[in-house]
Length: 65
Image (cartoon, rainbow, N blue to C red):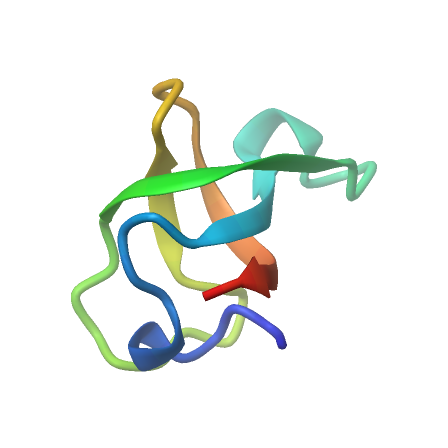
C-alpha cells in the first residue's frame, strides 16, 4: 500500500519512509509510526509521520497497518 491516504496509517504501523535528506536518492527508512504529522486526508507525496526513533519523513510504503 502506498502512504498517500491518512486513513491507512495509524500509530504502531510499520512503514517505509523517505527522509528529507534522502528525497533525491529515494532511500527508504523502515520504522514504526509514533505520530502522524499531516493533517489533510490525502497527500500526493505521502503522509508525513514521525517514527518511534524520532525520524520524520513521508510514507512511501505501508508494511503492516
